[in-house]
Image (cartoon, rainbow, N blue to C red; front, side, top):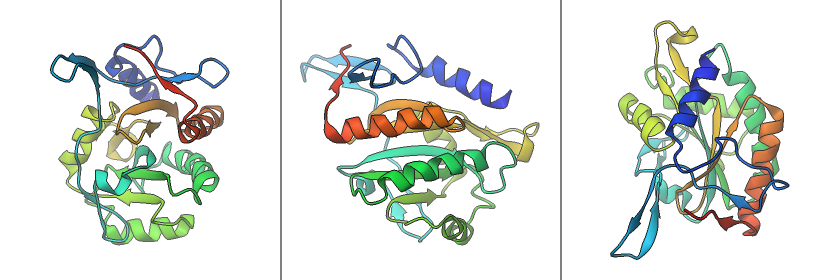
Length: 217
């Protein structure tokens, strides 16, 4: 039920699209751009929704900002290490993405904890080590709780919040969010469903090969 609510909220925040499911390569040669957009008369161009500036700290105590992902495609998600529900499945599926692109310097992963009081840098470091992942590719970040919740809702358009009634006292979307090199959201995929993650992997390849074109307004 909580995951269904999260997916519903994602759909409500997406504007200008006919569907909140990312198309497969067989359906279209175009990846959508998610979020609001407007025409800037001064620039004489369409301005698309972008991920806002941020500053978090990863499992190696390194500061992570948009500059960390310069000239990179990245996949964002939200989790917490003590999550008793969907997080283990999400991490299993994200490991598939990591293994597919871990040797590609143009691809990275950004996982935000929504329990920064418990998920310290040291704990995130141990968590990443247990997964056996390279911190240069997969960043597990912590920071100010309100900043994390805010970027989830306003930039990535997903649920990330405290909820006393939810297992673990928190609720977050199960979405994997595909962000291009211009900080635009190009796809959302259910990170608990293998077939959806297969589509994500294929769409990452499409962005890397530059075979897709930007959807028109």
